Image (spheres, rainbow, N blue to C red):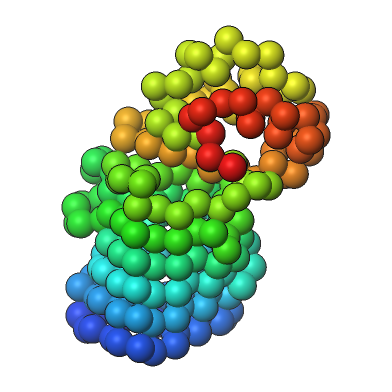
Length: 204
């Protein structure tokens, strides 16, 4: 039977937490990590973020961490490393987030690879984003119509740009990894870069 490991009702400071494969991990409720290093080796289905605080922590994904919701965690001053695909960061106002404490500020993703990752209800001026070949649409819903008027290569316009207008309320930024999206949507990273560089709402 796969063991369950719980981190709850405690505060930890300056520790290194390894989350290796072979267990199911629960972070929270009522947990605070300060200046800790969290090394995640498990897939996201083996990691449940209940609720809590991560302050000045380093969070490293040893392998690709897919479709993980950080919305229940309050992240402040944290540094992310590794590959993150389809992750959600920041506070989301919906029934799933019953703890209502999530958020993100002063975090650094410059050493991370973000692909299909969304930021909700936060001040992106406090978030350091990864540079090219990652790129980020800022305030995507507001710019979706204008971006939709452009000519985009391959299926990028039909899939990514049209998707910006359909995103959930509260999304303030969406990040992608150019080589992966280009391969998926019948274009090249170079073609995308030429066009994306012209858009003031894109950080790259």
